[in-house]
Image 1 (cartoon, rainbow, N blue to C red):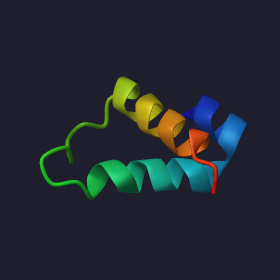
Image 2 (cartoon, rainbow, N blue to C red):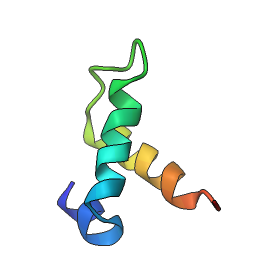
Image 3 (cartoon, rainbow, N blue to C red):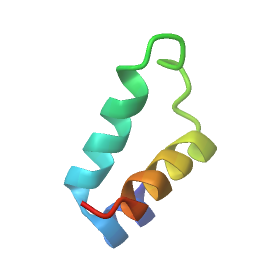
Image 4 (cartoon, rainbow, N blue to C red):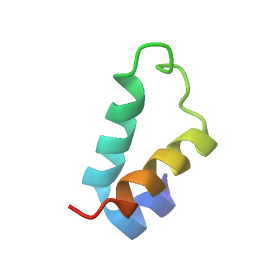
Length: 47
């Protein structure tokens, strides 16, 4: 999580955690692999 904050900022990490926590069955999936995957997806978005 420190690496995500360093690269993308604290707000990005908060968004990542919210995305995971707000999905029904995946609420308990706060594993490093899941966090990194969601972070990568969100970082790749071209908004």
